Image (cartoon, rainbow, N blue to C red; front, side, top):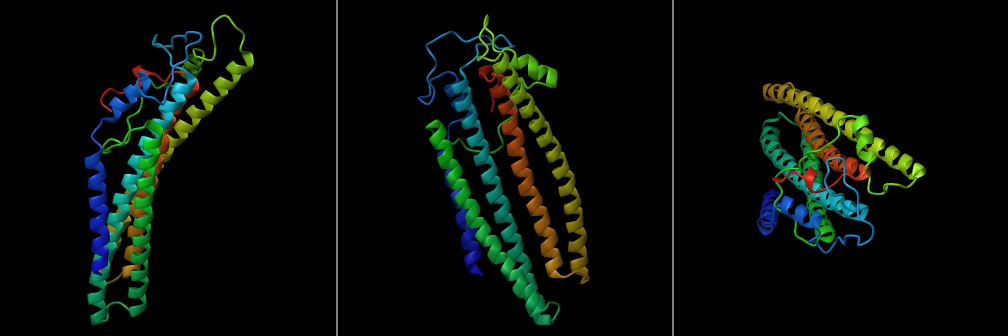
Length: 287
């Protein structure tokens, strides 16, 4: 089983090296993009853009899309790193349970068949860990592609914007100031499309919020069940496979929660892009 520890050590060292290499703050990179110091955005030199609802200068739709891609890529790095750490933790716990099970197999408390099934789960967890590492590396490459920079050290998901609308009415009010709707001209079809897109993003955002609440409740219930199974396994009334299944449920839900949080955060910024309201003013300075 020594090779298992080598995988864990490699994973931890991999993440530490990535984090040490990325010293630039994410908010600084976003400010560079919004302030047009990044080469990935070229501000339009044609008609001046209108003010948004907060009185701030709007930025072009292309610039807002570029900013959204950077935010999405960063959120993806955060998610993928979380998945690596959770998968590593799951594999380590599996290893510990199998070591204990091997001792019990000698005393006859666990069958050889159950032990082999437990080891198969460890093999799968190791494969999942390698896949998660590869996905994390790909997320860093995607971030570099979108921003021209290395990702900052990731500790948390990007925060929500500070000017997020709180109702459908506020969404429509923001959409009325979309840069595509120039003053003094008729844009009935364009306005309708902008409003529909903005409202759909708003609804998706709220659905993501409910999804997070559901996952939080499910995780709490799964962790409670795991504690019960652990206690009963210690007493000898639950098998090691039942214990591993309960543990797997907890980790699967936590990974699903990470992905739901990514969706939630990205949707919050997609609302602002859909309404044309993404600008420096809505990005937290301490991100």
